[in-house]
Image 1: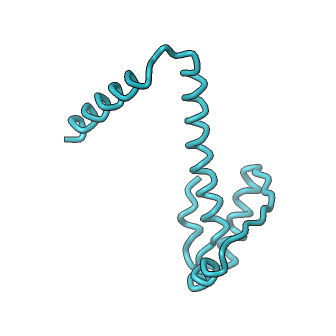
Image 2 (image 1 turned 135 degrees about the horizontal axis):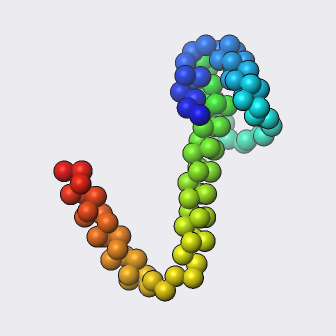
Length: 103
């Protein structure tokens, strides 16, 4: 779910809208606590209109998708006979092919 529309300066209304949408979709939300450096918090406070929870949630979802792809990749190739040298060669060939495709 794209959360960009919840990053607009709507304050509490944006947060309540997000909770409402999550409830309608049957998503159960839990709370976590993060520790950040004081200097970062001071910088974040300059953008008080930004919904930092939504931004963090989107970052967590994005990273989780990346980790799931990596996990699947590792599982699929755990019994592979490819050497590191073969993988590097294939990667270079793929990179060249993608460059040609993109023009």
